[in-house]
Figure 1 (cartoon, rainbow, N blue to C red):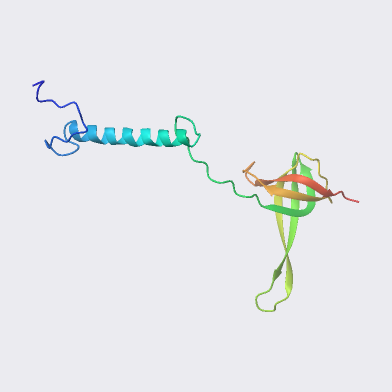
Figure 2: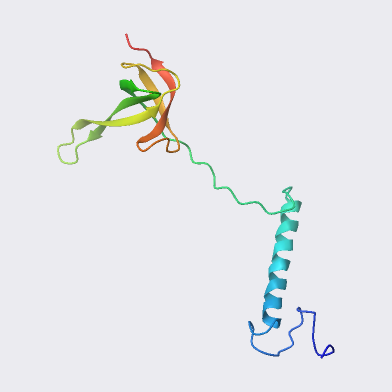
Length: 139
């Protein structure tokens, strides 16, 4: 029995279907190891670590908006009103559109200040912006 067993899985023996017995799985395992070692060598040649690391997606530029602080009644949170002009599709006149954003406030912005806010990860149920600069203090 020992003479009939083939431990070298790189040579196909033709016995049984792949997946039956140990032969088909051994071949797949060896192929996976070969691919993994090739990836590791390529990463080493490029100056990477020995183990392949997860590829990071390119960082997207964060959206910025400038608006007026309308409320600072919450702790470390302000409501910022951002206005934009939109051209009416039929009448071709410009309409002022407003949007309110909840922003994290570490800079102690007060009501009436003009601030710059930037997109960030969700900080609470409605807060996804952060105050990065106070452009003009309230008079």
